[in-house]
Length: 152
Image (cartoon, rainbow, N blue to C red; front, top):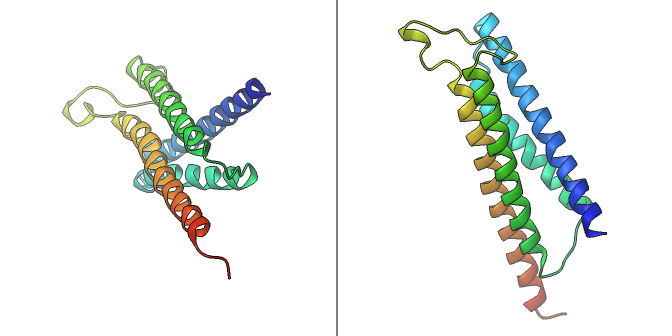
């Protein structure tokens, strides 16, 4: 049964990663072709949407036991590892000019082109980890407070 849960979580994480990266790639394509500046919104908005997906899934899989903190820590470490891996692959593809969205090269104005993907990868790891950790800590404090409060 545990292997089935791990497999289901891994598939869900991979699906969320693919959707997040596809969304950011689409935003980058629009920005590269039309000079709109939606990337700043996407760099922060997509990771916040990932936290919303986590909150929805957490509500679906609620387990009010004390070992839940270990499960959350494992989930966050797994998310960090998967995001780092996907970011490394994307950056390697950009470096070799094999990425879906063409990144202009040459000249002093293009030497940092493609760096937005690295920034997105960092934000896709950091924002969910921080927000989920703070949220889980708040939930733990609330549950602990309810257990200690006297019953009327």
